[in-house]
Length: 274
Ligand SMILES: O=C(O)c1cc(=O)[nH]c(=O)n1[C@@H]1O[C@H](COP(=O)(O)O)[C@@H](O)[C@H]1O
Image 1: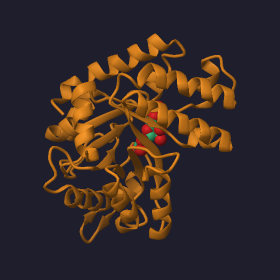
Image 2 (image 1 turned 30 degrees about the vertical axis):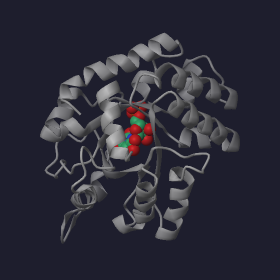
Image 3 (image 1 turned 90 degrees about the vertical axis):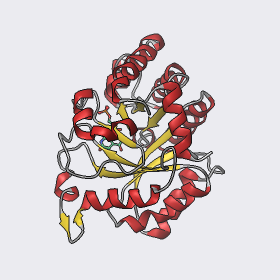
Image 4 (image 1 turned 180 degrees about the vertical axis):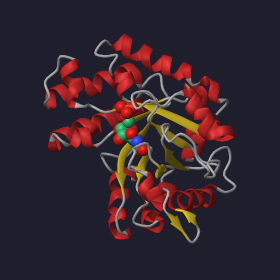
Protein backbone atom coordinates (compact mmCIF):
# COMPACT_ATOMS: atom_id res chain seq x y z
CA UNK A 1 0.00 0.00 0.00
CA UNK A 2 1.27 3.50 -0.87
CA UNK A 3 2.80 5.61 1.92
CA UNK A 4 0.08 8.30 1.92
CA UNK A 5 -2.63 5.68 2.37
CA UNK A 6 -0.66 3.90 5.10
CA UNK A 7 -0.11 7.20 6.92
CA UNK A 8 -3.77 8.15 6.60
CA UNK A 9 -4.86 4.81 8.10
CA UNK A 10 -2.25 5.01 10.87
CA UNK A 11 -3.34 8.53 11.87
CA UNK A 12 -6.95 7.38 12.05
CA UNK A 13 -6.10 4.29 14.08
CA UNK A 14 -3.43 5.69 16.43
CA UNK A 15 -3.79 9.48 16.38
CA UNK A 16 -1.69 12.06 14.63
CA UNK A 17 1.17 12.86 17.00
CA UNK A 18 4.64 12.10 15.66
CA UNK A 19 7.10 11.41 18.47
CA UNK A 20 10.66 12.50 17.74
CA UNK A 21 13.47 10.32 19.07
CA UNK A 22 16.27 12.83 19.67
CA UNK A 23 18.79 11.46 22.18
CA UNK A 24 20.30 14.81 23.21
CA UNK A 25 23.28 14.51 25.49
CA UNK A 26 21.40 16.57 28.14
CA UNK A 27 18.46 14.12 28.04
CA UNK A 28 20.76 11.11 28.48
CA UNK A 29 22.21 12.79 31.58
CA UNK A 30 18.73 13.75 32.88
CA UNK A 31 17.74 10.10 32.59
CA UNK A 32 20.77 9.11 34.69
CA UNK A 33 22.54 7.56 31.69
CA UNK A 34 26.03 8.08 30.35
CA UNK A 35 26.50 10.22 27.25
CA UNK A 36 27.90 7.17 25.42
CA UNK A 37 26.74 4.34 23.17
CA UNK A 38 25.36 2.28 26.08
CA UNK A 39 23.34 5.31 27.25
CA UNK A 40 22.14 5.98 23.71
CA UNK A 41 20.99 2.40 23.31
CA UNK A 42 19.11 2.28 26.63
CA UNK A 43 17.49 5.66 25.96
CA UNK A 44 16.42 4.98 22.39
CA UNK A 45 15.15 1.43 22.94
CA UNK A 46 13.24 2.50 26.07
CA UNK A 47 11.47 5.18 24.02
CA UNK A 48 10.69 2.73 21.22
CA UNK A 49 9.30 0.11 23.59
CA UNK A 50 7.17 2.64 25.49
CA UNK A 51 5.88 4.69 22.58
CA UNK A 52 6.06 2.83 19.24
CA UNK A 53 3.13 0.48 19.98
CA UNK A 54 0.87 3.51 20.58
CA UNK A 55 1.64 6.27 18.05
CA UNK A 56 1.29 6.44 14.29
CA UNK A 57 4.75 7.81 13.53
CA UNK A 58 8.14 7.99 15.23
CA UNK A 59 10.86 10.27 13.90
CA UNK A 60 14.38 9.30 14.92
CA UNK A 61 16.81 12.18 14.28
CA UNK A 62 19.86 10.59 12.65
CA UNK A 63 22.42 13.15 13.89
CA UNK A 64 22.01 12.10 17.52
CA UNK A 65 22.94 8.52 16.54
CA UNK A 66 25.68 9.45 14.04
CA UNK A 67 27.60 11.34 16.73
CA UNK A 68 28.61 7.93 18.14
CA UNK A 69 29.87 6.65 14.76
CA UNK A 70 29.10 3.19 13.45
CA UNK A 71 27.94 1.88 16.84
CA UNK A 72 25.44 4.74 17.07
CA UNK A 73 24.19 3.97 13.56
CA UNK A 74 23.79 0.31 14.62
CA UNK A 75 21.49 1.53 17.42
CA UNK A 76 19.54 3.56 14.82
CA UNK A 77 19.08 0.40 12.74
CA UNK A 78 17.50 -1.32 15.77
CA UNK A 79 15.30 1.72 16.49
CA UNK A 80 13.98 1.59 12.93
CA UNK A 81 13.40 -2.18 12.91
CA UNK A 82 11.84 -2.36 16.40
CA UNK A 83 9.56 0.65 15.77
CA UNK A 84 8.26 -0.85 12.54
CA UNK A 85 7.76 -4.22 14.26
CA UNK A 86 5.66 -2.40 16.90
CA UNK A 87 3.41 -1.01 14.18
CA UNK A 88 4.66 2.59 13.99
CA UNK A 89 5.69 4.20 10.72
CA UNK A 90 9.29 5.43 10.80
CA UNK A 91 10.06 8.87 9.42
CA UNK A 92 13.85 9.04 9.46
CA UNK A 93 14.92 12.64 9.97
CA UNK A 94 18.07 13.05 7.86
CA UNK A 95 17.24 16.24 5.88
CA UNK A 96 19.30 15.10 2.93
CA UNK A 97 19.79 17.09 -0.27
CA UNK A 98 22.56 16.93 -2.89
CA UNK A 99 23.14 16.75 -6.64
CA UNK A 100 20.94 14.14 -8.32
CA UNK A 101 23.46 11.31 -8.55
CA UNK A 102 24.25 11.58 -4.83
CA UNK A 103 20.55 11.98 -3.98
CA UNK A 104 20.09 8.55 -5.56
CA UNK A 105 22.64 7.09 -3.13
CA UNK A 106 20.78 8.69 -0.20
CA UNK A 107 17.53 7.26 -1.56
CA UNK A 108 19.13 3.80 -1.75
CA UNK A 109 20.42 4.17 1.83
CA UNK A 110 17.09 5.10 3.41
CA UNK A 111 14.22 4.07 1.12
CA UNK A 112 15.28 0.80 -0.50
CA UNK A 113 13.90 -2.09 1.59
CA UNK A 114 17.22 -3.93 1.08
CA UNK A 115 19.08 -1.30 3.16
CA UNK A 116 19.62 -1.81 6.92
CA UNK A 117 18.36 1.77 7.43
CA UNK A 118 15.22 1.36 5.27
CA UNK A 119 12.44 3.56 6.63
CA UNK A 120 8.87 4.42 5.67
CA UNK A 121 9.82 8.01 4.86
CA UNK A 122 12.65 10.54 5.15
CA UNK A 123 13.02 14.29 5.44
CA UNK A 124 14.72 15.96 2.45
CA UNK A 125 16.12 19.42 1.70
CA UNK A 126 15.09 20.91 -1.68
CA UNK A 127 17.43 23.89 -1.48
CA UNK A 128 19.74 22.58 -4.23
CA UNK A 129 16.67 22.90 -6.46
CA UNK A 130 13.57 20.70 -6.18
CA UNK A 131 14.67 18.55 -9.15
CA UNK A 132 17.82 17.52 -7.26
CA UNK A 133 15.70 15.34 -4.95
CA UNK A 134 13.84 13.62 -7.83
CA UNK A 135 15.80 10.37 -7.23
CA UNK A 136 14.39 10.29 -3.67
CA UNK A 137 10.87 10.91 -4.99
CA UNK A 138 11.17 8.20 -7.67
CA UNK A 139 12.73 5.68 -5.27
CA UNK A 140 9.99 6.40 -2.72
CA UNK A 141 7.35 5.79 -5.41
CA UNK A 142 8.95 2.45 -6.31
CA UNK A 143 8.96 1.24 -2.71
CA UNK A 144 5.70 2.72 -1.32
CA UNK A 145 7.69 5.13 0.82
CA UNK A 146 7.31 8.87 1.44
CA UNK A 147 9.43 12.03 1.41
CA UNK A 148 8.84 15.10 3.60
CA UNK A 149 10.37 18.13 1.95
CA UNK A 150 11.47 21.21 3.94
CA UNK A 151 9.29 24.22 3.05
CA UNK A 152 8.82 26.61 6.01
CA UNK A 153 11.07 25.41 8.81
CA UNK A 154 10.63 26.14 12.50
CA UNK A 155 14.00 27.89 13.02
CA UNK A 156 14.26 31.68 13.01
CA UNK A 157 16.84 31.69 10.18
CA UNK A 158 14.52 29.86 7.75
CA UNK A 159 12.69 32.90 6.29
CA UNK A 160 15.92 34.36 4.87
CA UNK A 161 15.86 31.60 2.24
CA UNK A 162 12.30 30.33 2.28
CA UNK A 163 10.53 33.71 1.98
CA UNK A 164 12.89 34.89 -0.78
CA UNK A 165 11.01 35.83 -3.97
CA UNK A 166 11.64 34.35 -7.38
CA UNK A 167 9.80 35.04 -10.65
CA UNK A 168 7.29 32.32 -9.61
CA UNK A 169 6.61 33.48 -6.02
CA UNK A 170 8.49 32.61 -2.86
CA UNK A 171 10.95 29.75 -2.55
CA UNK A 172 8.62 28.00 -0.08
CA UNK A 173 5.68 28.53 -2.46
CA UNK A 174 7.67 26.90 -5.27
CA UNK A 175 8.39 23.86 -3.06
CA UNK A 176 4.71 23.57 -2.08
CA UNK A 177 3.70 23.91 -5.75
CA UNK A 178 5.92 20.96 -6.71
CA UNK A 179 4.37 18.92 -3.91
CA UNK A 180 0.83 19.77 -5.11
CA UNK A 181 1.79 18.50 -8.59
CA UNK A 182 3.29 15.28 -7.19
CA UNK A 183 0.23 14.59 -5.02
CA UNK A 184 -2.44 15.46 -7.62
CA UNK A 185 -5.27 12.92 -7.91
CA UNK A 186 -3.95 10.77 -5.04
CA UNK A 187 -6.57 9.67 -2.51
CA UNK A 188 -6.95 9.62 0.45
CA UNK A 189 -3.60 11.44 0.89
CA UNK A 190 -0.52 12.03 -1.27
CA UNK A 191 2.82 10.40 -0.52
CA UNK A 192 4.88 13.59 -0.57
CA UNK A 193 4.76 15.82 2.47
CA UNK A 194 6.05 19.23 3.49
CA UNK A 195 7.78 20.30 6.67
CA UNK A 196 6.15 23.44 8.06
CA UNK A 197 7.08 24.53 11.57
CA UNK A 198 4.42 24.95 14.24
CA UNK A 199 6.26 28.14 15.21
CA UNK A 200 5.96 30.14 11.96
CA UNK A 201 3.06 32.26 13.18
CA UNK A 202 1.10 32.43 9.93
CA UNK A 203 1.61 31.91 6.23
CA UNK A 204 0.16 33.17 2.97
CA UNK A 205 1.33 30.04 1.17
CA UNK A 206 -0.96 27.31 -0.15
CA UNK A 207 -0.66 24.68 2.58
CA UNK A 208 -3.43 22.44 1.23
CA UNK A 209 -1.44 20.47 -1.36
CA UNK A 210 -3.12 17.08 -0.80
CA UNK A 211 -0.14 15.78 1.16
CA UNK A 212 0.84 15.32 4.78
CA UNK A 213 2.48 18.15 6.69
CA UNK A 214 5.06 17.46 9.38
CA UNK A 215 4.82 20.28 11.91
CA UNK A 216 7.85 20.21 14.22
CA UNK A 217 8.24 22.86 16.86
CA UNK A 218 5.16 21.63 18.68
CA UNK A 219 5.90 21.55 22.43
CA UNK A 220 9.50 22.40 23.37
CA UNK A 221 9.87 25.13 20.70
CA UNK A 222 6.60 26.76 21.79
CA UNK A 223 4.11 25.69 19.07
CA UNK A 224 0.56 25.05 20.34
CA UNK A 225 -2.67 23.53 18.98
CA UNK A 226 -4.06 27.06 18.54
CA UNK A 227 -1.00 27.93 16.41
CA UNK A 228 -1.56 24.86 14.23
CA UNK A 229 -5.22 25.75 13.69
CA UNK A 230 -4.32 29.33 12.78
CA UNK A 231 -1.44 28.43 10.45
CA UNK A 232 -3.12 25.58 8.62
CA UNK A 233 -6.86 26.36 8.61
CA UNK A 234 -8.65 23.61 6.64
CA UNK A 235 -5.29 21.91 5.84
CA UNK A 236 -4.96 21.13 9.59
CA UNK A 237 -6.57 17.74 8.90
CA UNK A 238 -3.35 16.67 7.16
CA UNK A 239 -0.97 17.90 9.86
CA UNK A 240 1.28 15.63 11.90
CA UNK A 241 2.46 17.69 14.86
CA UNK A 242 5.87 16.47 15.93
CA UNK A 243 7.26 16.64 19.42
CA UNK A 244 10.58 15.33 20.68
CA UNK A 245 11.92 16.90 23.90
CA UNK A 246 8.50 17.48 25.49
CA UNK A 247 7.68 13.76 25.35
CA UNK A 248 11.23 12.50 25.99
CA UNK A 249 11.57 14.61 29.15
CA UNK A 250 8.87 12.43 30.75
CA UNK A 251 11.31 9.47 30.85
CA UNK A 252 13.00 7.29 31.91
CA UNK A 253 9.86 5.69 33.36
CA UNK A 254 8.23 3.86 30.39
CA UNK A 255 4.69 4.40 31.69
CA UNK A 256 5.30 8.14 32.05
CA UNK A 257 6.74 8.21 28.53
CA UNK A 258 3.77 6.35 27.09
CA UNK A 259 1.35 8.64 28.95
CA UNK A 260 3.14 11.76 27.65
CA UNK A 261 2.77 10.46 24.09
CA UNK A 262 -0.90 9.59 24.65
CA UNK A 263 -1.54 13.04 26.19
CA UNK A 264 0.13 14.68 23.17
CA UNK A 265 -2.03 12.60 20.84
CA UNK A 266 -5.15 13.57 22.80
CA UNK A 267 -4.23 17.27 22.74
CA UNK A 268 -4.23 17.39 18.93
CA UNK A 269 -7.52 15.60 18.26
CA UNK A 270 -9.08 19.05 17.70
CA UNK A 271 -7.27 19.32 14.35
CA UNK A 272 -10.05 17.24 12.76
CA UNK A 273 -10.39 13.85 11.11
CA UNK A 274 -7.24 12.71 9.27
O1 LIG B 1 12.43 18.13 9.86
C1 LIG B 1 12.29 18.27 11.08
O2 LIG B 1 11.85 17.36 11.77
C2 LIG B 1 12.48 19.61 11.66
C3 LIG B 1 12.21 20.68 10.82
C4 LIG B 1 12.09 21.96 11.38
O3 LIG B 1 11.73 22.92 10.69
N1 LIG B 1 12.32 22.14 12.72
C5 LIG B 1 12.65 21.10 13.54
O4 LIG B 1 12.80 21.32 14.75
N2 LIG B 1 12.81 19.84 13.01
C6 LIG B 1 13.26 18.70 13.87
O5 LIG B 1 12.23 18.44 14.81
C7 LIG B 1 12.80 18.11 16.09
C8 LIG B 1 12.31 19.13 17.12
O6 LIG B 1 12.51 18.66 18.40
P1 LIG B 1 11.82 19.32 19.70
O7 LIG B 1 12.00 20.80 19.56
O8 LIG B 1 12.61 18.73 20.81
O9 LIG B 1 10.38 18.89 19.71
C9 LIG B 1 14.32 18.09 15.89
O10 LIG B 1 14.69 16.75 15.57
C10 LIG B 1 14.54 18.96 14.67
O11 LIG B 1 15.67 18.55 13.92
